Length: 390
Image (cartoon, rainbow, N blue to C red; front, top):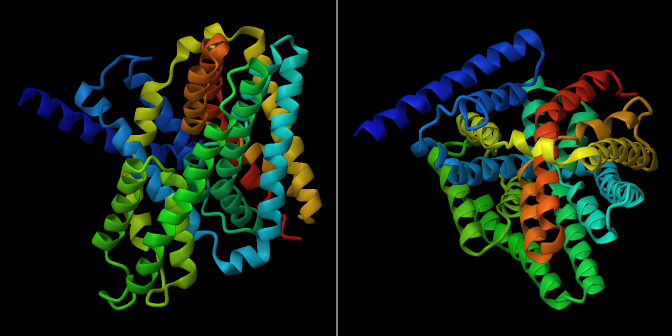
């Protein structure tokens, strides 16, 4: 019983830490994501190692639930009205940021002396973002400008582009190194993307018909939880992307459902407690020691990624005809990076054993920096564009 008591006490303290982060964020203008990650660093293994194992072991499950809820909300941002108004910008900025990041980081790292195979994989990893951090900053600021709505759409789809780019990069590298299994790698990617879209449609279509019928226009909380857990569980079971599946369900419901006024009101109400635990445990798992191992190449990688995001965001926004005042800020708003990048690095370790250890250390080290300071850039971008609706 002692272990259970310690776990419950720790969870209580973590929830209260979320309350404190909210208040500090309002008083200091620091993103609460950064504050919560900092709490995790202090409480977890990088700091005072205060979290009991029973709480730390919750991280994988909490991650799936929290990010699947986030995917529902991001999908809900892809309404027909939003796509009509901002769809061109969402598509062009997201594609431009991914393409420019891949090209600039790969070329830059190769120029710094890194083998081309490792440079290409790191360039692909650099395309990944952290949708949870970006979305939470948007929600915390309450921004509802054209820039904010476009950014929500970009965050919803850019990791899908990143997954495709990373898979193609792995295929090229395997061809160069003579360990090619192109058909298998492309098949896995196609299965994950197409399968996730299909699962989202299978769940989202009947949900769109049924949601809101039982409660006079508002989906029930149990109904929202049921959809989230069903989508997350089936995605994990079928080895699919719960982000893409959840986003698809959200997009279908927000566009097809006719029996409610706020499709995701209940998810918004219950998401934050899960996000508190998610961000604190994410901070507790960050490996500060990895920063000491990446050296000049790691610093170069981070600078190249920042430059590439700024250039890619500006180019895509210019092509989309976005207001001039918004164009420099899409890239900085997309700097946060977390779990998707580390997941890519884990796959790279398997397929590129010669470079895997370095890629993993660099990715973890860079993630610490981008996860802590990226939300600050996102918040700055939102503030700077708050009057750019011209």
